[in-house]
Length: 68
Image (cartoon, rainbow, N blue to C red; front, side, top):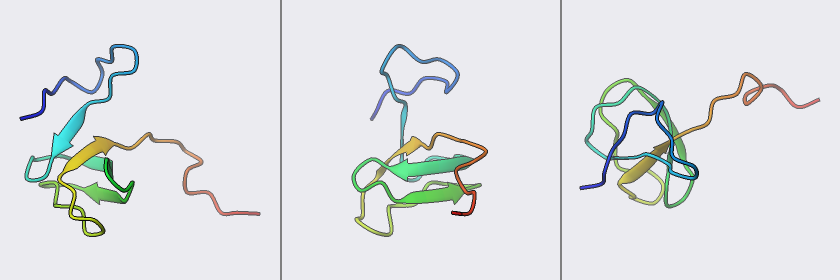
């Protein structure tokens, strides 16, 4: 099992990973292919590549802004 730390606690370049089946809430990216999901229950296997490891997606207020 992958070591987990609270998301507010980062040590330099450390990125916390989550596994499929874990309860989670928020935006995540597949660590294998980068596919993004938003979940409010358990993390699924990646629908694109079948990967089972996820990392929290960086949030930005401009990440979904329309292109000009």
